[in-house]
Amino acid sequence: MDAISKDDILIRVRRDNPWWSDVDNVIPEAESPRRVYFNSFVEVALNKNIRRAAILLGPRRVGKTFMLKQLIHEAMLRGQDPKRILYISVDTPIYLGIRLEAFIEMIDEYSDNMEYIVIFDEIQYLSGWEVHLKDLVDSYKNIKFIASGSAAAALRLKSKESGAGRFSDFMLPPLTFYEFLLFIGRDEELVEEVCHENQYETEKLDRYKCKNIEELNNCFIDYLNFGGYPEAVLNQEIRKNPERFIKNDIIDKVLLKDLPSLYGINRIQELNQLFSFLAYNAGLEASYENISQETGLTKPMVKQFIEYLESAFLIIKTSSTDEMCRIKQRERNFKVYLNNPSMRAALFAPVVADDSAMVGRLAESAIFSQWQHSARFGRLHYARWRNGEVDIVYILSNKNAAWIGEIKWSDQIKQKFREKTSGIAHLIRKNPSIESSFITTKTIHSSSVIEGCSLRIYPSALYAYMVGRNITKDLDEVLKRD
Image 1 (tube, helix red, strand yellow):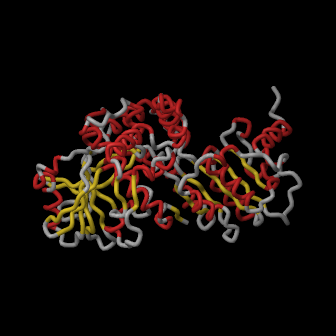
Image 2: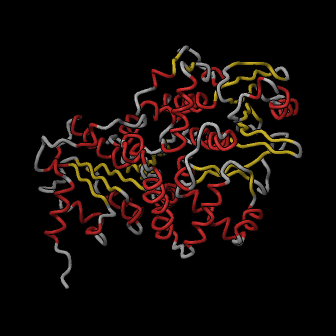
Image 3: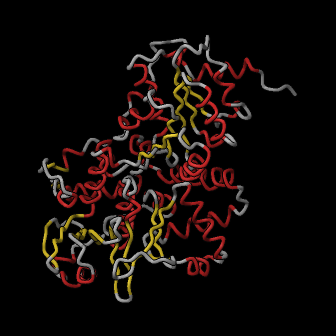
């Protein structure tokens, strides 16, 4: 049998870089909607004054490759010679075993005196990628290197260990509800910005008013079922059968391919079992011991697999505080949310608006998913004590609680105000540092005062929209870390 020839490899490289031979080549992805993170990523990726590789991180199918192709288009618009842009998808079978530097040697008429852009998509499939990429950054001062990868936390960990001072990480999360409305063209139809000058955090959430809560809620249900993935939002065929796209093409590939290849996992059936269990119980409090008892897996295995699932951006794990809002030193209980709530619908069944309990739990997952886009996401916890619980507690760097909130998909607060706000009232009495609070509902938008503290009342759909929009509107808040 013959080895794959260099000529055949070069043919594939040229096919993946059609702009080399046709400067008027239209990049189809350039015509698609852009994520709200695009301009911010461009400033990181195309900044040639900083000799660092830009690493685009994120889960599968959130638009990383689309963004890279749109970046190529943007670079051309800014004057970059198309013949000096190289794009390589590392997981292409014909490229297996090829050194990164070998691709640079395939650039036509390469010269050290010219500036180039080199992009390695899905770089995590190359063993030791971080060492090789760091060497390239050090060796080729005339090349701006850009890479992407799906198993985000594993990539981030390796980039910190081996790429100190050479990599700039940029996180691309699933679509926010705000972006979802933009993509389907209903943002301005359903939400109105009523205030432009407020600058305080508690006031930012009062910028927006819902024009039609019934339609906004319908869109929110769609978002919970399939809205976290740009391709599912834009493709009507995928929307008809999100299970096939989300489960088979995203979840299964992460569980069966990404995690086993990155971590050498051979207990794939048990990993799949654990993820299904966590997805079914998303939003409920759990412990390693409880999960072990329910699944039959050992506690060490449960703990290790949860770390793997977090690293692959399938789940979000949040820790608890006590009634004094003190973060517990020894983690016993925690909550697990889905990184993208659409995964539950794909695994089990689509959610409907009348299922208040399930929508409430998925709304909690969705709202935490909006917050994960913020650099302050690590400050979010939940409070749990003997007779009560509050879903969100925001802890400042001085370890004091600043604000708290409850996520509900119900309008019962109108008839049972004291009962539905009892947890919030308890925490405010115990923690004078708390300056504001909120509770979400199905349709009610109002405000009140509880224990001398402001209480804002928002529909869950509107709150999810506001969080996503405020974070993405102020690009300094986006998870963009050097």
